Length: 268
Image 1: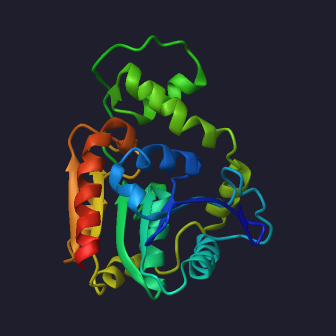
Image 2: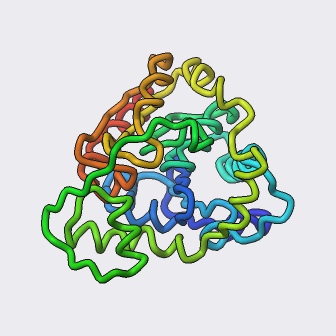
Image 3: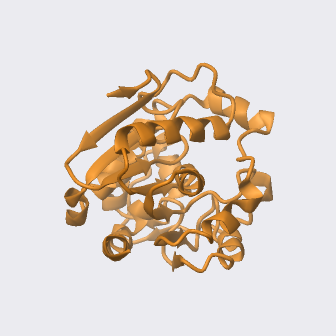
């Protein structure tokens, strides 16, 4: 389905709505392939969205900033959720947008993010050192896909290699790099209220879970700790054995925290 011919999304189930926003250069497949594994997820109405310029959301006419993308998502959520309290789930750039949307929307029941962007300008981030941990060798076939896998994943095994191909590669093949490069080069990749975003989140009386990888070479974890220290409603977990592809490196940790988070949302 499409919202205003701009946002492609898939919706499943009934109940309280959850909106899943994926990371940069990925697609909604990366989120559905992970979260649909968890039994608790099936108790909700799930919206998996392709962000503009990614997946099947290729109509990017008139979009020139992250704030405009957030505007579009806010309109979509308002139109589809009605008066229900929504749950926002995001990875990386999708997590950045979830944090922003939580401060904009009237009815938010909780925010769950993995490796969220907190500083859009990559030059200003404090990122971690990435090291591969070979659990079981995977033959290096010299392909671009294999190079990407070894760059982003910490845990190397046939299982994580298969998950990378299933969750990450579909979106990479549909990524409109030119569109997003233009936004980044224009200086409009950063949200206008980025500097105040976590102060605004601290005012919300909702569960907020942030799961980070200690070996994340894309967004790191140190900037998060500095900013999240001002957010008393935050539950922060750092995975010592994961990087930016945390959902592939350690889906079990995500599952455990997801279950805990949903329990808090039900009792909030």
